[in-house]
Length: 154
Image 1 (tube, rainbow, N blue to C red):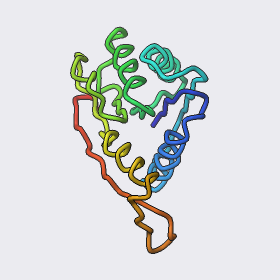
Image 2 (image 1 turned 180 degrees about the horizontal axis):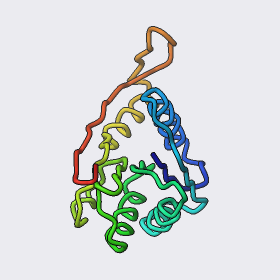
Image 3 (image 1 turned 30 degrees about the vertical axis):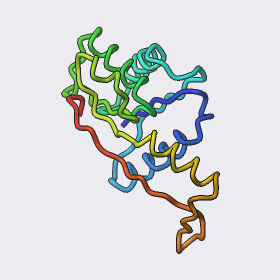
């Protein structure tokens, strides 16, 4: 597996997802052969550039997980421009389930999160209208779930 992120690791949510990804990969008995975390803000351009770098490694990964969909969209564009078959040569997966993915020539496999509802819940918590302590940690937890969107890239 490979991983591509951005913002120099300053996106704490992406860092936590990467930690979980690493743990799941290890638990499955697989390994991450390469990671690229660009210092620049996330963009399709950075995703395309870092995908080119990652896939030119001596041992390129068979699958790449991106910290978000715009980086993954750049990865798709790199593969299409270089004639790299998705997913038979390399599988790609993103995160966020953003609407712009509908415009891509290949449907990205991604994880959709309820970002609007997250904002609503955060506001309600800040206003003191939500107080849901977790019985194990006594921290306030609201699990809004997620949805795997199966595309054509995995």
